[in-house]
Image (cartoon, each protein chain N blue to C red):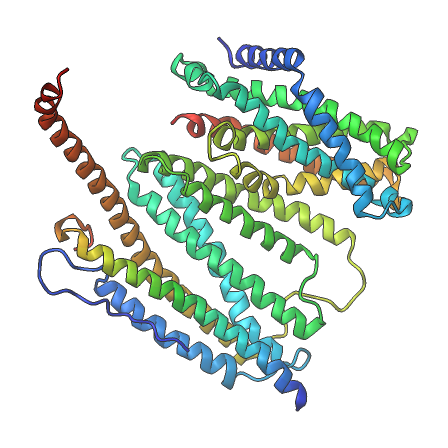
Length: 48
Length: 267
Length: 228
């Protein structure tokens, strides 16, 4: 039973780190997209 | 768990202001969030502890999908690099795709190594082993850090694209060479231990499914990020071009007004 | 002009420059020698450990020296923009690549022999008769691989301001297979840790394949990389 609590820290930490990394990447790319999106005219964006 | 904003804000003016989000990325974003939640549910709650490894098997639901997605991303980088070099148009879109793919690949290799180290610590008591897989993965990581460094060397976009494409193809060529030599090397030193880092072949049904959930979640994220990041890179390149145009226009304006000044200064 | 003629001309030019300036002889070789001494400090001059790891240390010192030799080889061109001048004049990039490779390779080979000598003296290594053929083959094939990688990434990174620090980052992971293979092969040739000579030949094949792959790949990639 005690082993579970030792392990739990590592495992939860690992999952948290993973989602922090994924979330961080996502947040950064969204923020960059917003900032740049405001500065570039829409007709130059190939996805619009 | 962090929430991913799948709906980038529109400024609503109709002129400049649209972000890189489109319907495709919104759908992918929602799917990513849902499947990530699914992964947490299955990974941490529903799937059972392993008979041999205990709870530490839960790392596998991140570790294995992460390296699979990483390998995929580097192959995409290689294909995009080849497409840039060998197509007639040499469209920079391929270069940006290659770069975005490698960025996420590097992050996922890092995740693979970290979750692997944590798993190893729990299961075998050591953070690291010099076995074939770990050694190759660490070299893979450094190789693509080098690729990203080459992308930042500066110069024109075309220069960046050509350099990076060549390095991208060479890097993917390195992978089998490194893998081959490392595998032979470590197989010579295979001590008869239980320190087997291979996936347990008799994996329980739910555990296998959990890995697949992880794979699905990371794949959706990969696709979502790739679309967003490629578009952001396109906008960055457009900004560079506009910056260059602005600088040229400013210099021309200076030149136009300069003759009056120099005459006044008594040439 | 054929690729081989260009390569020979470039290589002879580089070696002649080295003969006159003696940069490798006066600076890199002593550096390599000092590195071998420093290794002994790091390993507490424990002669058993040193003898056991001597092959590895030789190749480590070789690898560090490779970086310097490559830097030097391309710095020689950068000063007068010689590389660009050759390309503009229509010189085949493959010829330049193989010429540089040859120049770097010869200098590296001489250095490796010196380092082996140093290992015999400083670490108490012994060279046995039955391992000589293996040893020589290893030196040749490993050098080809190292020179191939070094020349390729050197073209990209070395000789340009602000880019020299990129060379180690690109080169070291790429030469990992050579480090592994060459060390194991030399261990087999010298009989370190009871390695048999027969084990070494497997590694020589790895080294040979590596050299061919990077030699061909490098020749193809060198042109695009230096054309800027």
